Length: 266
Image 1 (cartoon, rainbow, N blue to C red):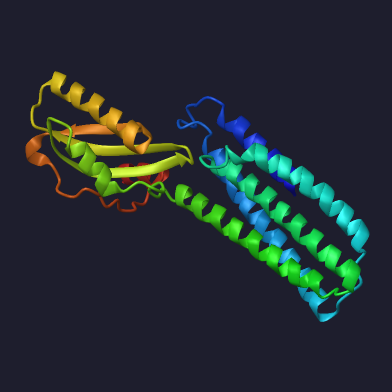
Image 2 (image 1 turned 180 degrees about the vertical axis):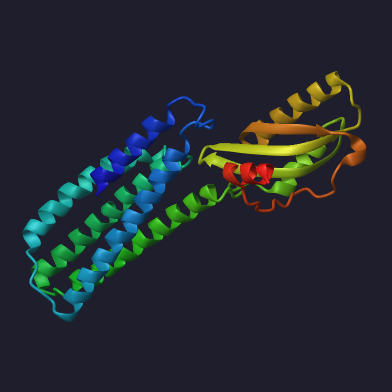
């Protein structure tokens, strides 16, 4: 499963590096989020399997081959530590890498637990420790999976990125000289390390040079303070500005071309 997670993550990174097309104008950055969802789900599936096996072992404890188990666990621990150290620095800002990192961390903790329980079982014969440790390991994996899926869902549902406050962003924009008001602000994530914003700006003056200066200042502040590097800003006339910072978007049914043609013929 770790090999599968690493290959999936690598493929998502490769896909996200491809240029935008007329069918995918934002490029393929969301492939990383999709890979994170798949990795999060596989973590849950793994934990369910662990819980199931642990439950049966709890009802009917079985002898464990502690020495072979210890050898495999030590080898796994060394490999997982090496991989975890390589991924650690990249996992903070990239959800895709973070999902693989949780896979590896889950295995690292598992290896430590197996080594401890293996030594104890070898000298005491307390085979009940095997399912107890399995429940503990499964709980850690579930925690990691929930964390990954929650972040992935936030991105897929166009939620405001973690650590960004819409009102704070709007206030920062309004502090730019020449801005009368800001409204209809939308902030979302294209992927875990690319944030986007759209907003309507009312300028005190309506000349082109003033608006150009305002745009440059807003983009510099958004990039520096909030790491928002993809913006779409629309200028409105001062008299028609809407008071609401956040605009409510209503769901509209898209009529088919056939229904339009039918109505026209009628």
